[in-house]
Image (cartoon, rainbow, N blue to C red):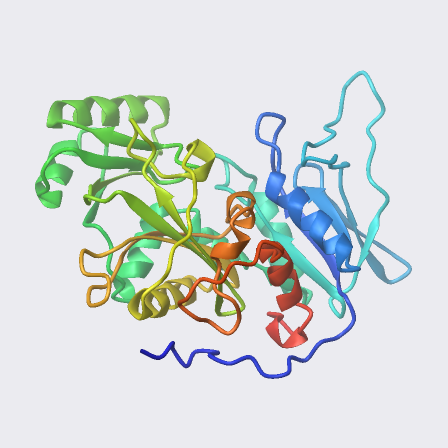
Length: 363
């Protein structure tokens, strides 16, 4: 069978001089930005001038008609040198940015008031307004950081998902369970969350009601969804960049758990996509307006004929796990066979994608 015509063959790409790169993200001492640090190191190796910036405290300044990004220092390994009341506040040297030669990579925008600030979205939208290539857009992050909105977009585009319903209020679990009409156990998810946090296996209606009431007591504005639990031994993460599949990995369900997140301990493996999985993954990324995203799905029983069931699209996919499986990703152009290439770096492939200015949004 032939691979899809969607950018099936890569002709001579329009390659220009290395661009400047700002990676804007938020992390804390307990969860250092390992992917951001990985991108920074690979970018430097390509001759790309790069700033790994922390959203907290970041601001854009202007001097002599030039724009600069200002950030607290982000140490090797991804940890942030946060301000200390006993010490002088220290910023990195201002990093010059220009829409003509600078890519802004946004990671960790979060949910305003929960895991991020509304001003971070304002900064991202302002950079878009100024004409910068912003990866991913504020709109894409907005969709992907909200599991219910992600579900709405999937349904709007007729993308198959496990059956999912929303709990409408603190006493809404019974009505939601009736609408879901699924056998236990089921999956309960908070509307925002990542790395498998905020995902709960529910064994009974009584447990569901208790969990919902507890969550609402802690946060009266919380969003909760219930989802049928599909039987599977693994899910699949597909890395898509510039409308091309550049990385694939199978994530086995963790022993003694029901999740498959690499951050929770799942050990990624090589995986070969079917034609249908390729085309549907590309559709899912396009539906959320993603430039560089991780698409997660549960495979159908008959993978050659059945569409996969999509869980979510991640607008800030981690790369540490899949980078170690460089040989698992299909070489360009897209092919289904897996070729061993231990020297191949998926992170480098992502960075090289934007050497071609045709792949820049807002340009």
